[in-house]
Image 1 (tube, one colour):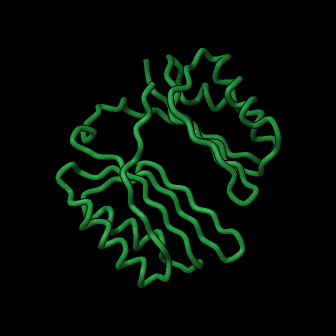
Image 2: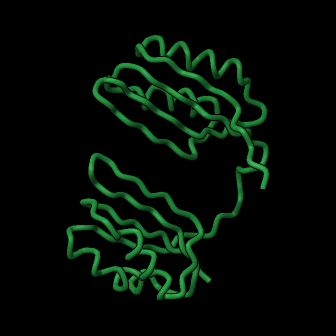
Length: 172
């Protein structure tokens, strides 16, 4: 069984998710991981599916999506080996303030310099208010107070507010 990464990007319209996931289900593929969003009126979706199909078969099954100007691609990806997951502590990083170039770059650099990994990131610009929300995994040995202080220092230079807090864990 292989893993296939599928991306669909382009102008938004109703039914894209239903059509794409229907095509994958018709191939017998299992949807294991996904993210889907609108970016300024453009649809963006990334999926990881498992099954016994070649990427070319997946692209062919989703070819009808391209008639509306959507771009579809599929490629095989190696299975997640879990390396690097142990010993990491999840945090949520939130930023808000006036928009300007370099906010994401500067703040994610602080996280990277601390050995952290961004596992999810979303930004929105509404009028002049810029908002960033990121899920961050820091090494267990990282000094949370030091990382937060460095983030605040960079944020101050950028004219934005920042907060780093431990992520609440869901109990299922």
